[in-house]
Image (tube, rainbow, N blue to C red; front, side, top):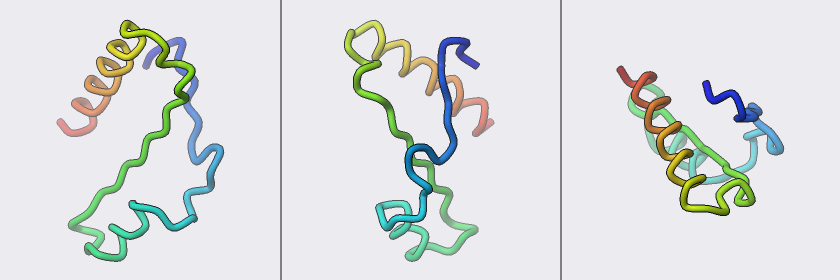
Length: 67
């Protein structure tokens, strides 16, 4: 885990509103669809270095989950 990262589950939204993930859950069976929605504060991506760092963090995290 990235020490400086602040993670919040279902914040600021409850995840109940209709959106892409909700529509995909209706279209596909639970065994065929796993949805992940990520929202990133744009203020934290002000530099190319910050963007690259976030990409590395997400890549490492997703690889460990999918392994």
